[in-house]
Image 1 (cartoon, rainbow, N blue to C red):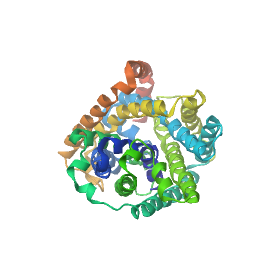
Image 2: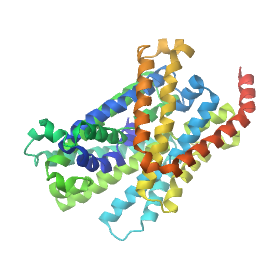
Image 3: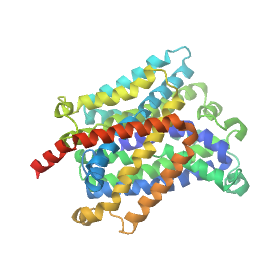
Image 4: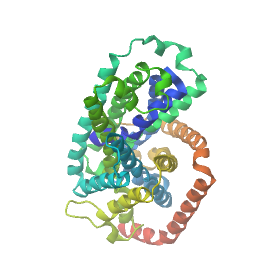
Length: 425
């Protein structure tokens, strides 16, 4: 639960709340609720898979078993590339640290927090989970203080029920804001990566996904009300949570909020990704896609070479001086693409694993396993369309070339995989 909450609560609510206020004004709290509905569709698909066929490296194994081996390795390669977003959490942390203590070497601070989370996860999933639990507790307390202090400063709640206030830029602007805010709610689906290391995963994975999404959404609605209700909208549009925090907190509490709320939220997101990211690569090695020595584990049972690979992916943008905006946009664009693979895999669950479907503690109706993935594809495609100007032709070309190289490798390596599968059978 702490890994799921830490994964969800991160740069999204810190950065995107103010942007959504500029798009939909007092409709921001309602936009968070619509964002929940948007995120719920692909999340339901992953929850159903996690309940029926829980395993370590969950999403990779879903794609492998239900869509095919070559599709799975393409998914995994895109997932690795998408972890550029690791850098966004570390860079964001450094920027807020500089706001509190101007003059810091932000590159050094960002690299330092990346190293800290990397080392915590090298020490094993239990150590990382305890580390995560402590940080999530501090984070939620800080955000609840923001809501508690802020609500007493909100004097007019009627603006949240007036259509002209909720839809200042029309229904299209409201939906655009909700789609943007979905980025602040994604992350719970990755607890399925820990299915092989979780007690009673068939029940707990869907439960954790559902509860964490609901709790975070309620938290975000409260944050959005405070963000829009304390100061005039013109003063908060496009701004982060610190703007209102200065108005509602004493100087000491303001520093505590930025350090214990905003900065900790970035660390929990970073730590949560490190907690699950190696599982798919480890399973791919067992299948023969990668040389076995790469899956070597340390004394804590962690595949340290794979964890180090993600560490390198995450720290490279920091060391090369990429901006927070560039890292976030590129990482999320790739994330939209690879996020489709396990969702579409639900199409084939009943046909290929009917016994697992029948025994699953949480299952969707057969019609829903066809309709929901189609809805998710439509949503994600819309997201890619909205991102076209930010990604640019160069970004799309790079993604296409990278995917082509992975496919070429998949065809070259496939005989090894087929031979291993044949021997296993």
